Image 1 (cartoon, rainbow, N blue to C red):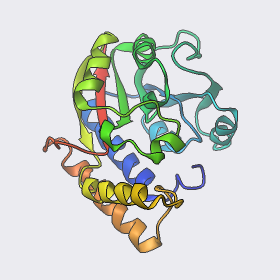
Image 2 (tube, helix red, strand yellow):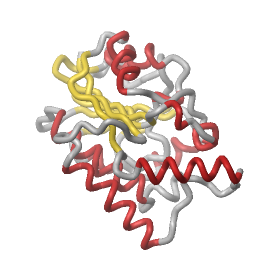
Image 3 (cartoon, rainbow, N blue to C red):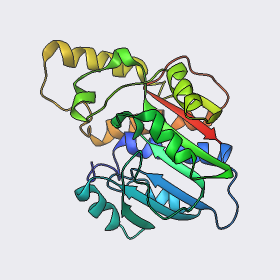
Length: 233
């Protein structure tokens, strides 16, 4: 994961869309306080740090060491729902990017993070979508679940959070992804679904996926490989 985050099409394009969602939906002034919950190996740190003072926590020690090695922000050990750290500090933006699906108690995790938002703060959540797309990819990445738009909104509401915006993304490539996963299941291929493709294909997929940042606020995609939600207290 650490080796691919810099130039794999999915990571690069997703960062572009996340940056757009932050700029569109999160009111950040000078000196904004930002927290990334579950930063993994740190692929999002530079992008998030461009919006303010960044803290981040990560459960896995190896991933945390790689993230800290980037020299961006303050990186600490932590786990959801109960080990957020950084004292009682409150944040203008909390980013929970493809983390919630790994946690047994998603409700308690959102509730705990919501308690660390400032009064006008926002939480940006991304998760894998469409439960019937469950595949070896999810098992390999230790997912507990995939979400529907209604399901993610319900979990947020149960955690006492208000949904400011919610929608699918990674929608333009959805048909291709479905075909790939069906073929993978039928052939029982050992090839990784998320392996880096050749450079021309990588560039093409990145361009198509990243293009969604221009339309995600104007078109309500009926389905997609991922969901985002912007939440407030």
